[in-house]
Length: 335
Image 1: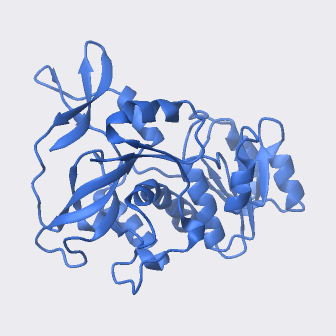
Image 2: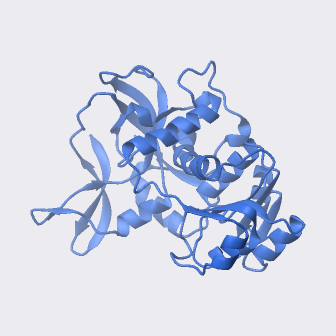
Image 3: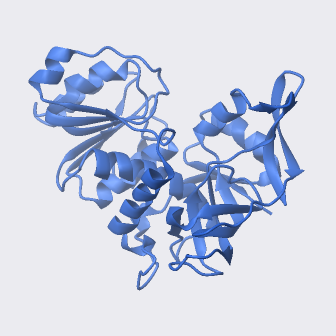
């Protein structure tokens, strides 16, 4: 089968569409014919990172962190899915004609979504749901602030916050370019952190009470702002570190407000832990359940897609993402 891999010639990594051996199908696994996969910021780090070498020869590494497609083979022990089911999954090496994945990692694609939308949504919704619902334990009516709200995961966090009944949603950006889109998605207050004080404005619009939940995709210098903006017993969840890995922490304010500061990532989670995230998402959004009576999903959760390209243009897709000009997900159609 064909797969998009990272190869290294001389000292520079690059992408190549090559033939690779299909993976064997094990117990409780399925084989999926991939129709689409999205581009994620972590792909850029994967492309630029250190690669594993075996016997002095660079090892081909299939790229992609998610995939959407149709089940073509079911392994022993799989009871919730059958051949022909449309599914999406977080999976290493998703940019290939076929993937083999544990059935526990699958999410049914809603009937009113395309494969492209499934690929655009799965990783963002898993990340946002785990941060907002599982980690921050959001309850109806709470206020939520989402940094880098125009990112793919940021926009899906906005959608989930509205879906689960947030009383106030604040979204931050570094420019005013995405303000109208964020408003359409459900953001009540857009704060341009390039020209406004996030903490001061957050306290102003909450009448001094502060924000109950802060989802931070930026990190770095935003930590001190988050502490200042947070409500008593607020929860600050560090999801990304686009602005750096280190920030200033006011331990007195942390204690005074009785704040929770938690970091999340998929990189150190076991397969079982990832499966639990999938289970939680399927539990809370009915059309994702394997036994759902119908598969239609609320339009407010439809992912925002900026660009669709054929998968042999993956290099261009990565360049578009690195340019930070796209509002929405970039998706590759696999053929």
